[in-house]
Length: 242
Image (cartoon, rainbow, N blue to C red; front, side):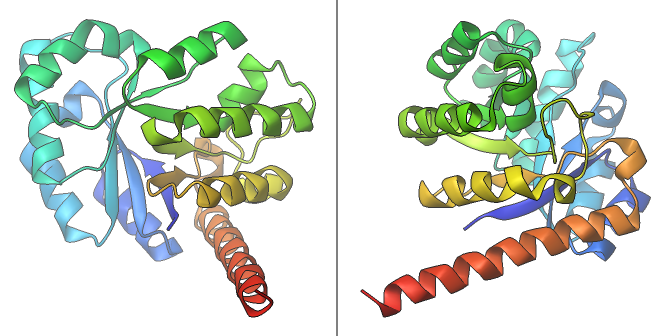
């Protein structure tokens, strides 16, 4: 089963906005400032009925405090994934796994060349796939069919490692981090493929701040519900004819 998530800093107003819009899952963007008060983040996370993952800080200046705090947060909220950039994973993964061997780190693909993309997928034990990064940076805004072929190959080889997905509403040549509903033509085929391989993590409608409004969030929830209804209808039709 697929779960739609939004992304925000762990602040009460943003939790409330996401829940009001209909999201039932979220990725919390963390900084060292937020990790300095783990109990406050835990209280927020437990107050709202949301499936949660966390995004590790993109900069770590005080690993002696930040790394144990991140592990504590993951334990207390039973996070299914901790998204982390390669630049943070490489120097800190050993220390994090020493604190918690089962910590569900999921390294995100960034501005990678094709060779770097496949090396990222092969060498990291847990993955966060950012579909927008794949299309814009790795495939250099190439044809849509090439994006789908690459995604199919990636899932065939590495679906077992995939813990988390970022899926903004991107289209080649357009601005980044648009809401999902801005690119149904991309979002629906990606959701179909993730469902087909049995992906069970969160799919994040990762939108820019300008699109983090009540209306934009509700539109993304509606888009996802539309996809789910169509998917269930098609599956039911196939079962009836089998």
